[in-house]
Amino acid sequence: MAHPKRKISKTRRDKRRTHYKAETQNLAICPTTGEFHLPHRAFWHEGKLYWKGKVVIEKDVLV
Image 1: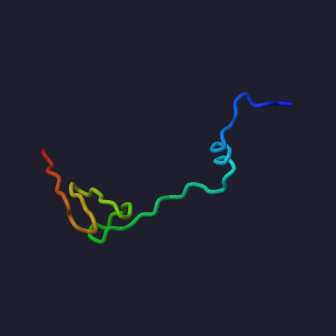
Image 2 (image 1 turned 120 degrees about the vertical axis):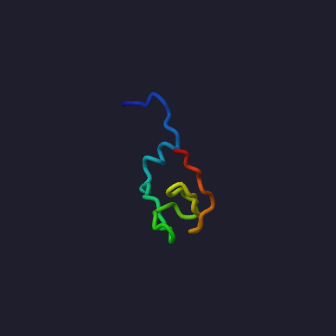
Image 3 (image 1 turned 60 degrees about the vertical axis):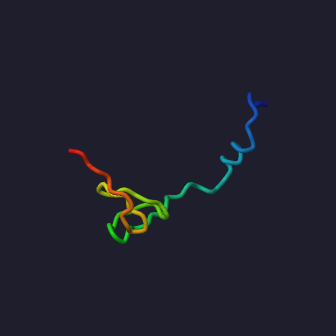
């Protein structure tokens, strides 16, 4: 009868046996720009940082 060379941890065993799989992240749409972003997070769009549909920071673009 075959025996494993190393003990498999309970965490590793349980991860293999689970039926819960990773799901895609939910995305929100900014009311101002119409861009998709993670909910409750600020995001950059065209050199500006938006949060709750308002500009928080404008990034200076040097050319």
